[in-house]
Image (cartoon, rainbow, N blue to C red):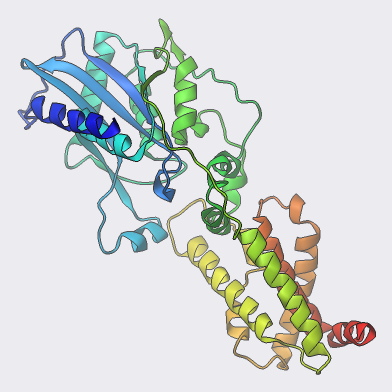
Length: 396
């Protein structure tokens, strides 16, 4: 059935095609012009798991039926895409397509589509149309993407607020105050490895409690807030209408999660420590693997903190256990004086960090606790080499 709907949507998009070449002056809207907020449900990939927001415009212009979608979630995929994304220099752009083309993707992937018609005056519709068309000009359509502060959803909100002739009041009441990190957690629970990676990358700014309006960086939150938003002459939008039911549902039955993997690694590391201690060895191959892994993570943390334009990756407390120096220590003799001093300092830092893990101002992933314990085990063995040996001898 969805394939049939998809083909119909594509056919309609071609039938209502309309030439929108620049004429220097925008066409006048009819009295029946309609703008609406389109909200799409989450998809199976990381880029789509948070859903999507766009603006739909329907009218008759120059005797042509138009049904357009203004989409701020478009980007150009090039060879340097991932490099730009990692450095926070990725530009998104406003695109305009026919609704049938836009809907086709969601029909084929089983994702739901919801619509909220904006209750705007003719003057407000004209202004919103002007703003969108002005923003669609080649010199204006590109913007520097920021996941939390400037994305496909926040741009839609800002355009509607600018077009309104009276202040828009967002009246939605949340059950409790949320941080940015907590706001995205409900989605990332279904992607445990992505959740782990994102928690490694995000720093202290993401643990701030969101201020009013900031939750609308998430399409679902924007839809909820627009449902009760109001302005001088009443509600901003009509009740939400389901255009396309969601067949895809987020789920996860993965057992090979970061928590399971890294706590298992810690147990293996602990067993290896006792086994090697009986033979007078203070460093094991498993220890070197943990140092290599945490050192690489530390390099990533430093890179995202100091060498990118990302604001959300600054002040990252994962540096407490994932020090880039540990990558160097994999290949060095542990008997060097400065190495011994490093481990003394690291022992003190890790004892405090692990002891207060759940009270730190930044919420770190539980799997990171296992890695932090692994680094602490190495540190204790370097600072107090006899401790593990005595325990191993006693148990032996």
